[in-house]
Every structure is written in C-alpha cells, then in structure tokens.
Amino acid sequence: MESKGECMLIVTTNEIAGRQVAEYLGIVSGDAIVGANIFRDLFARVRDIVGGRAGGYEKALGGAKESAMEDMVGQARNLGANAILAVDLDYETIGDSMLMVSACGTAVRLA
Image (cartoon, rainbow, N blue to C red):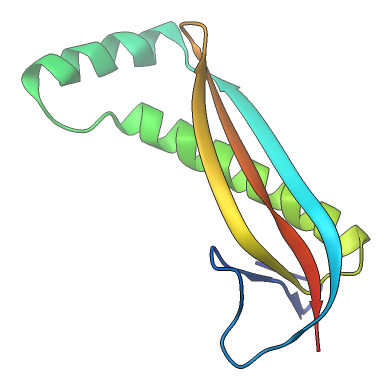
C-alpha cells in the first residue's frame, strides 16, 4: 500500500528477508462491516444451487478487506511504522446479512 509516496510493507510472515526490525511499535488493526442486501442474498442462494460464483459477495468482501487494511495501515503510519508484520485477515458473518473483515498485525520500523 502506498500513500503520499511512502511505501508500507505488509507481510503475513514474522520477518522480511534481508531487513532488520529496528523497533516494534505495537499491534495495529482495522475492521470493516458491510451489509449484504436482500437481492444479493437471493441471487447468491440461486447461484449456490446452480453453481458458479457469487459476484456480489466477492465484491462486498473485497471492499471490506480493503477498508480494514486501510484502517490498519493508518494506525501503523500514526505510530511511525514503515512495515506491518504477521498480518492476519479474519472473515465473520454477523447475523444473516452482515459481513465483517478484521485485519491485524504488528507495526514495526525497519532499519
């Protein structure tokens, strides 16, 4: 992710090959909750029966993931980080029509 010309390295691993961590700044996270409308639900159920991909859900999940990641990166930038290690993405359903994506990782300053 890039913002204002500065690159934030985001990895799912605990280290970045060839780079040393100068400082651990803490855990950062971001969450996004999106509603799945009734028509998308209906079409997804039909698609589940006849096969195929549920494009509406994929688009909603993609947007929620992007929002959660942006929130996490914003927290890391506020701490002075230039990388986030051990990133984990979690997906949950809330009730019958809400989708939640959580992104969590460790903000660090690389040497």
